[in-house]
Image (cartoon, rainbow, N blue to C red; front, top):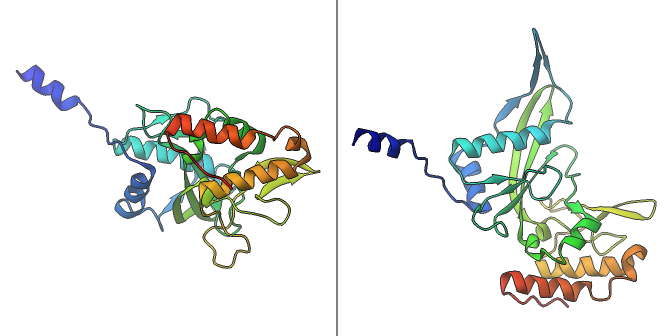
Length: 242
């Protein structure tokens, strides 16, 4: 009986949370906004203060992973750090609960990539459920080696993406080559280009951009129809995109 009792005590119960529930726990229960962190690096008998911003994003993601473990939150980390998403919040269904973690310097504004343009468009042909993934975003301010968490959001990709003056969707373009999808300044009332209101608007803008962009124009004839068909196959939902 004693052995059975001890075994029962050692079993951890993990919480299955949605991205919204994770955000609520992090922001309203844990109260992370306004908290400070110090970044140091130690090698043998020398410890230095790290004052560059290069490592902040990776450190915040590693901290989040450790925090979720401490809080007994169910998740699975992507074994390939270069492949979307960073975390799966639903280990029983890897088509749901996809979570990407982003961060940016509050004083400079969001300069991170939402996704690689070509890879994202191609992935939607077979894995259209990816469009429903969540982005957990940390805004920080850095002074010396001290960072302060200024704000946190959880957003869908269409709530981050926006139109631009050049293309129907904002992108990073160099020498007439599109590389990445870029975010709006979604939290600012003064921003010229507002985020899309729905995933349908986002898909329409992505499709129009593919028609306008010379490198994808000729192969774009049935891209949107294939994406909508694949979304229906995965989710049972028929999207209507004008």
